Image 1 (cartoon, rainbow, N blue to C red):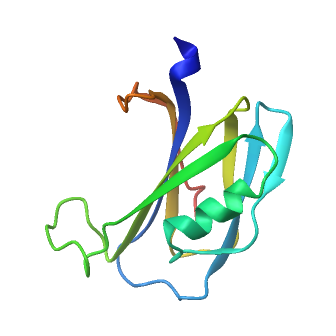
Image 2 (image 1 turned 180 degrees about the vertical axis):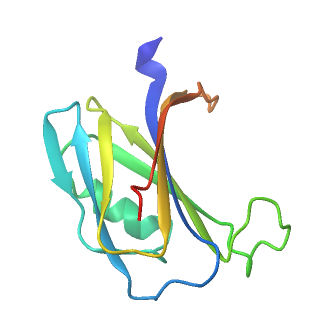
Length: 140
């Protein structure tokens, strides 16, 4: 039942050799159903999930966006499994009638790289249905 499916996007920011500047700003441009492009306010690479969630929920395109954040930076995650000097993962779930068809990170965040994975959707019971596409950062 497609009414129980929620579009989901995973954005990963990673730098393998040094911590980025605390004041490195960026914003997100989001296309919805290929027809509406909206931008968030200024964000930081270090923002907590609730800050990103507030900015996304200011946009007029959906009922609600839920955001979670995982920090896999070596200083916090000493498992050495899929870690980096700096690695933050945001998971965005979009509730409403419009689907995000493209998300772009806008700003000079070098040397940090970012990857964006569009999951087909997740069901309301939490099971994931698999990736739709993964788009890495443009070449530096």
